[in-house]
Length: 106
Image (cartoon, rainbow, N blue to C red; front, side, top):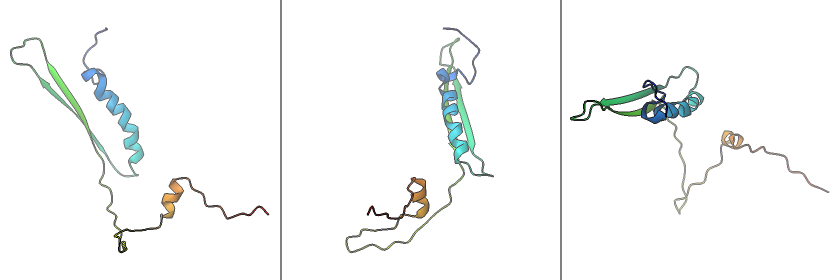
């Protein structure tokens, strides 16, 4: 095991750095133009009672994304309290469904 100076790359066995490396691409992909996210890395440092050579370090990472816009809909339900709604066109397109005209093989 090689030793090196303490850094964000190796603190908490490198877990904070790996968490950041894993999450930042997702953060950027979710941001729209002009939006801003905040990533906060918190390190808690302490010296255990009675120890002259030991330190305890705990870390965590938190991400604050912009608030999502509120959306609402109004739906009628039947006598069984079931609601039926049409699938929005944009949702169909996201799922990769492409409508084709009906064809017959005569």
